[in-house]
Image (cartoon, rainbow, N blue to C red; front, side, top):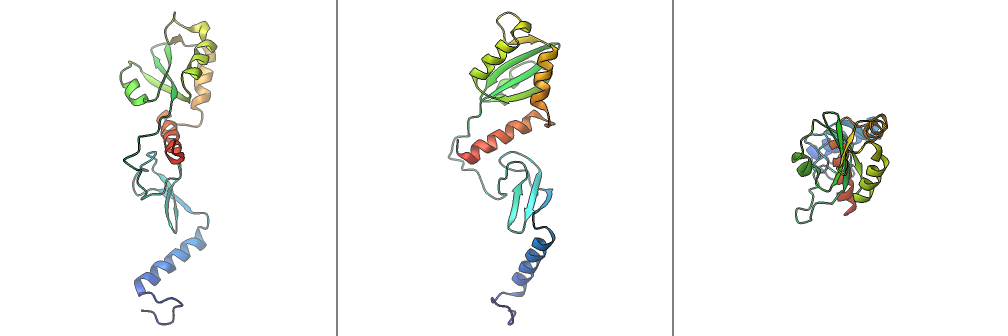
Amino acid sequence: MAGSAPVLLCDRHLALVADWLAGREEHPDGLTDLLPTPCPACGSRLGVRWPSGWLCAVCEWRLGDVPDADLAPPRVDVVYYIRFDDRIKIGTTANPRQRLGRLWHHELLAFERGDRGVEGRRHEQFGAWRFGRTEWFAASAELDAHTSALAAGVDDPWQRYARWRSEALALGA
């Protein structure tokens, strides 16, 4: 025990407090670094280390918090855009991994948050390039511009979907 400390702490705990204070002075806004393990909510590896612990830099999930396994996973409806050869499919689902696992496609172009209403508006918007009454469309400059705008700033559409699920989980939706 360090007798001159304002609070009686052992030497080990005093060293931890000293490290914590030094970290606050050096990085008052937190230190961005790789998380020790992937975020359980969104899968990101990027985090912010605070003296009080780690937060995911993507969804702000506190490392160490565990999602309640008794709660149903949040429902996040998405409109998906996939490419097969020179065709693009616009569809919707609440379970994109399962749905896209059943569809032949070469590339996932983008996700857009939305339900059948958004999907219907996109079908109408790009109707000039639609193949009959299917959900498949011919590639066009307009459709390419739309999917590029949706994908802007995201290397992998699955990261955006994970963020939306994480937000829904945090909001209890």
